[in-house]
Image 1 (cartoon, helix red, strand yellow):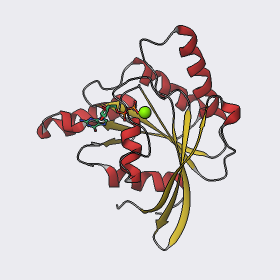
Image 2 (cartoon, helix red, strand yellow):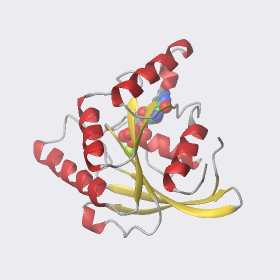
Image 3 (spheres, helix red, strand yellow):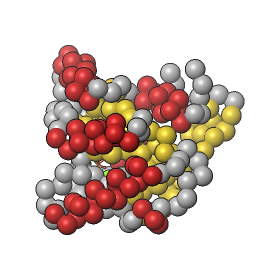
Image 4 (cartoon, helix red, strand yellow):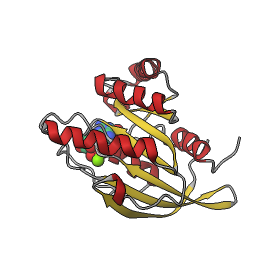
Length: 204
Ligand SMILES: Nc1nc2c(ncn2[C@@H]2O[C@H](COP(=O)(O)OP(=O)(O)O)[C@@H](O)[C@H]2O)c(=O)[nH]1
Ligand SMILES: [Mg+2]
């Protein structure tokens, strides 16, 4: 499995509510997880750009839905794929009202978005699948959205502990699981392989 060639990557839009998200024209993959888990870092690494997606040591900074448009070369063909960076959940300092608004925004998007082919749920290898992650996974199962689990920050564990920790998360989530590190890039190609298949951009 190899990653596609990224011919172009651009920031498309930030939307604060579901109705202002640009209409879906191309296949989309959404990324969801606790704030600060490493969503933006994963997207940057997949795209191969250091800073297209703002990353932060300041949790809770992404409030809206951010869309990025990629032009790819897959085998002999060019294709377009949109990546959607969803605002993170579980940020303790956010008010109840904000959390509710978050929930509604994300749930509407995940439930109704026509172009959405799959959701990448991201957890930290040191924290595993936590309550809010489990709720999201259950929601995705209920609405029948295909999902995969990316277990990130594997570089934070000693090499001999990574595999077991990643597999444990996969069992808990009952999903196909991919270990990843934004520091080393480990896992990038396997994740791309899966995303291309789920997007319908690569057969087999
Ligand atoms: N060691 C390590 N740090 C990471 C990794 N991914 C993200 N980080 C760090 O975790 C923090 C939050 O990352 P960010 O991508 O902004 O998380 P987001 O809030 O989920 O978008 C930043 O300081 C990143 O540098 C990783 O794979 N390994
Ligand atoms: Mg982010």
